Amino acid sequence: MTRGRKPKPSHLKAVQGNAGKRAINHDEPQADSLLEVPPPPEWLDPIGIQMWERVAPWLVSSKILTASDIPNLEAYCAAYARWRKAEENIAVNGLVVDSPMGGVVKNPACTVANESLKQMTTFGSALGLDPASRARLAVPGAKEANNPFKDLVGKKR
Image 1 (cartoon, rainbow, N blue to C red):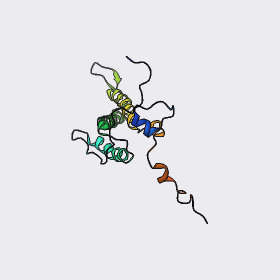
Image 2 (tube, rainbow, N blue to C red):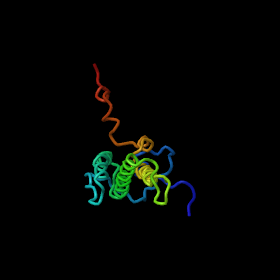
Image 3 (cartoon, helix red, strand yellow):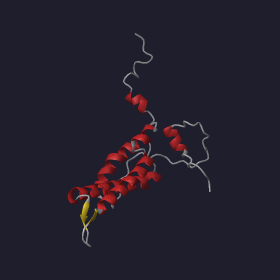
Image 4 (cartoon, one colour):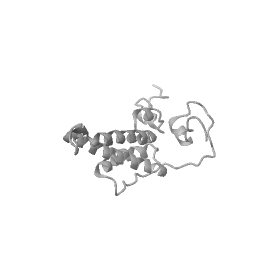
């Protein structure tokens, strides 16, 4: 068993940068990023499908999503749907509900919401969907596309 932090995959080093200047494993299997947005799975909740349709196009255009990342995207969207439904339940029924044994107990939807948020954080971070992991991404061509002064460089009066 190895100790320490798991090594970052080479394709993520290429996208996020190799700040530590550690050696890159050139023999690592490479996955090609997807060129088209895959359709959401049929079993996914409609709320999850809405999230898929919001997030998947960005992941594909940023060249982040690979075929092996699709289960992460599915899990993220499913967790998002569970979180939304749990929050709706909490809004209707409150933080505490009547217990079948008498008295009040914490609404079980609170536990579902908390677990779903943790799952969203885990899977979203793996896909670069949270601000911290997105800040580490270096999307190819992003600097050139957002720089309004790029056409002025090298021009003479």
